[in-house]
Image (cartoon, rainbow, N blue to C red; front, side, top):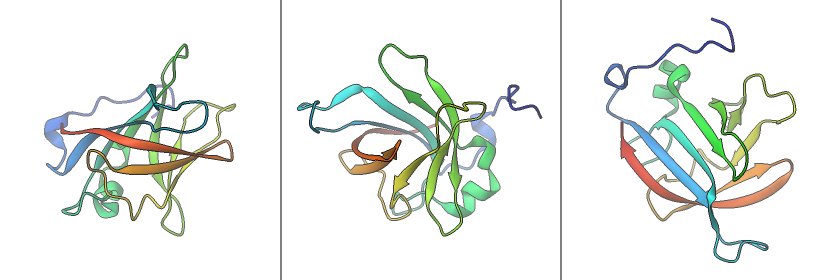
Length: 136
């Protein structure tokens, strides 16, 4: 399959643990109220403790997709990837100028509404808040 041609994934073909997760920029310098327009939307399987399920990710890695949303920019599409050593990152296919972004301790983070997670973007750490978690 070509990097530019993605096959559609039917939600009904995925295990029920798959969720759509939206995280938005939390309060930080320059954004005292956070910014709902700076966000990521991920599709990933969650275990019973609301952590990313690495076994289900491995079985359905092509389905673990994400969209990087920024104001005044088109969405950047990519995948959730599991790196050696157990860390998680976002990889953008065909996006030479956009480096992978890494989730900070994503393997320990709980993806429930109101929880905070951190992402390293271009070498700088940013905090995001989980705003929605929904069944597919």
